[in-house]
Length: 444
Ligand code: 4AD
Image: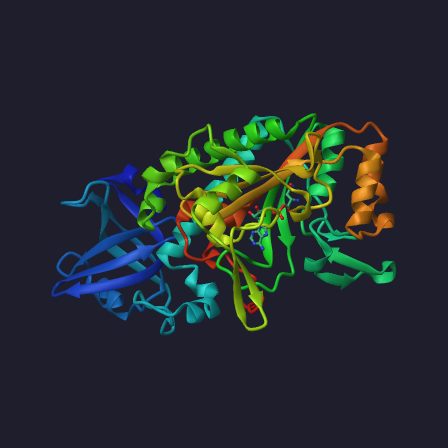
């Protein structure tokens, strides 16, 4: 019977067939120990010269790393290790002998691995990360479905900016002039929320940011819920409930993979609501207490500005200092208007602030969520569009949403690769997506 390696524990003392690839092979006299992978996991096989036909023994000698094979054998429990299984192999069918494989189980430089990403994906660590990514997306979709959100797919070609005009990818669009790759599905999700109540988008988004940080890619996936009649507090309550669900489900269902890649899951088990909520101003006070300056690039190096000036956006060192004393995601709300997008609603108690919220992951993983209550007043929204120098004509459809039954509404955006990086404890976001797009990389 053909079975997947991750289901092998159900077949102890039974004969099974595995279809996959040779990851590695060791031999010790009259025994060989091929390690096989099939996409769902890894298993060690045992081939004994005296128990298999000569042709099978000889065929195993021909196998190179990544040769594709079908093997049959009896499943047994590992004599010493708990929850580890082996395959006592009795037959082998070779599908294809692989050319000398460029990636061996030894260490390689990251540039080389990125060039060979189409093959690097096969390494057990990369495959584990992608299985965890799959679980994260399933958890998100399940939470949304079970909480009555409607999937609302936003377009990728858009006529207008959402998150500032400086990071747009531009393309020609037939006779209609310029189109831009979507920076965010939010504005469309707002139309969706007024049609369907609670919606979410989940798709690729694009930012033409020429930044080579460990947390930025130019094409990333974002999940954006948008809810009619939700204010900032309702939004934060939702974020907390949602993140707790996603993290706990991933820890429960993918513990094996998380442990395989060396993730300390006890830290993730602590991600239970309530999460700390700080105002931006309180977060700046933490920076003052810890004496973390604003660092500005100048013509001849860097300038360190102390104390951190109120009104500036946070960079990685600020985010790290703010979350340092917490073991849960930290929600920072009520931001200076100048640091945030045009659509955020002003705080009725202080017009210098907007009702925005950013969520910073613990352990220094930085911002994973950005959200806000939206400006629902027609005149104020028009003022903001003008202040930000955005083309009013292209926003007419969005402005209509404030003319026809405007309501308070809120939403947020979760960066999929950011949450993958956090849950998998990744040094670099390039491992969080099958084929990362960065300013210096578009291949493979
Ligand atoms: O904070 P951002 O720019 O917010 C929005 O796009 C809103 N329209 C969301 C909303 O309210 N519906 O981006 C949201 C999240 C960030 O917190 C981050 O997780 C991720 O998207 N993100 C990126 N991830 C990887 N690479 C980049 N260059 C990213 N830029 C943003």
